[in-house]
Image (cartoon, rainbow, N blue to C red):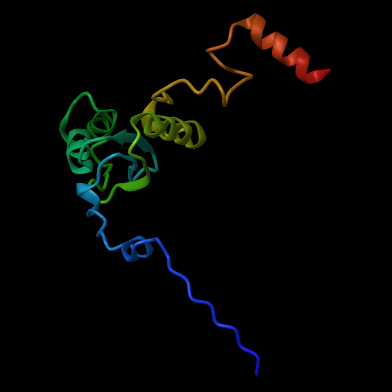
Length: 145
């Protein structure tokens, strides 16, 4: 039997091979994009850098919240504020806003009034509010030729 053995030394630490840090419980998470869904099927997508539970409580109690206004206008509707759906997370505030905006654009949640956090000019070349009419027309001319 011809067996070759090689020994090597890794420079990686043992802890880099395992995730030993416990994830925060859902209400204590921060830097997340989340989704709230009403019993009628209407939904809201938002993002927060703060503890999720604090932001969710604002949706439940503040009159300025679109979710709260929806529930006041429809007293028979319910939102499970204890179980929001976390759709993504990122430590970068800018990437968090982009993710929120992309999800709003994709899902078109009724309670957001379809207003993204930031304009998505790169992703909406045909209907971009960031481009002037001349630039859009020029873009289409180059693509079609």
